[in-house]
Image 1 (cartoon, rainbow, N blue to C red):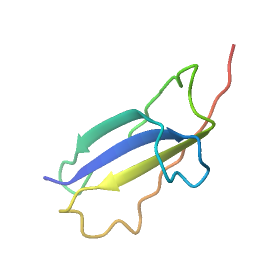
Image 2 (cartoon, rainbow, N blue to C red):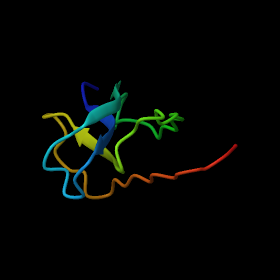
Image 3 (cartoon, rainbow, N blue to C red):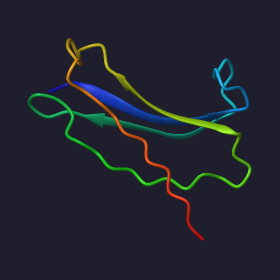
Image 4 (cartoon, one colour):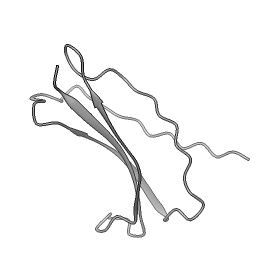
Length: 79
């Protein structure tokens, strides 16, 4: 399949993300058969990361129906 999904993590100084301070992660996955398989990514936020962080998934043009797709962002704090 030529279907793609781009997983993106961004930070911004504005809560509405009117401007993006930094793209922390951007990875493109290409599907096989019926689409992109579930993925788990681990990312360390930089020490100078802006206050607001969001994760988003953008789908390629060949994806016709993504109504059953969901994504979860889990933030873990550790020492």
